[in-house]
Length: 323
Image (cartoon, rainbow, N blue to C red; front, side, top):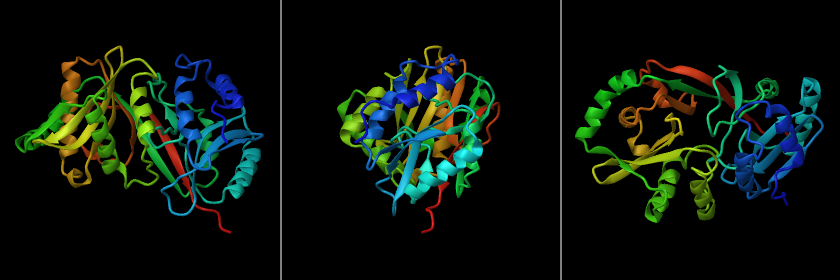
């Protein structure tokens, strides 16, 4: 059984690699929170090797045996050839498909950084060494999923681009309504909504009620700031939700916009984005950050002026080994 405390070597490697950065949390608050989810996963296993460490667990909803991997850290200046040999040996021990990196739940994903502008990391962003992407890409993944985070300091352009979508959907009854994470009815409805929106996604893991409650409680407890949650409504019907996070300096982080499948690809997401940028404008946010957006997400197809990419990342899928 996995120890309830994160392994000492994992914490030590992270201290060695990241203690020099201003955003390093010596208490590893986020890691310890995520580790609890990892210990509850099916067939969770910890690997403590010569060149790297990692956690693995079975994805229960996947066909066959698919392993999620995460908590990936290497020794300083790991030799690529030694790493490749060790990685291959571990894959042979768990020969199913591999996907990752993940932190014990699809609600707690992290990615390896590919390109970094040097902009300070925002809360909830997981720091990795730049060589991790090179090491993992060299192991021939079947698929690489690209993500990016971006920022803008002037929202006027995106509001103008979004306005026609917002006008059209407002005529059909669109509105944002506050979502209270402290209201039990809202919490139950949000959990159901998240399952309906994302349940068909590969590797999605529905949280149990206690797990969901822990995740909800963590929204404002793992770092400073205030969660901003809204229902997306058409007339009286809840058809989606949005999750933003306001930092203490006024910066607004766009985390998630989720719409029921029947309302996707109709421009409603653009209307929601427009309304949320107007909210940020009313709050006089000095900047907006768009956190870990998948590169092929439909939101990226909307004309998007005045935006600056601050980091790009990757996640990986490895085919099952042939036996």
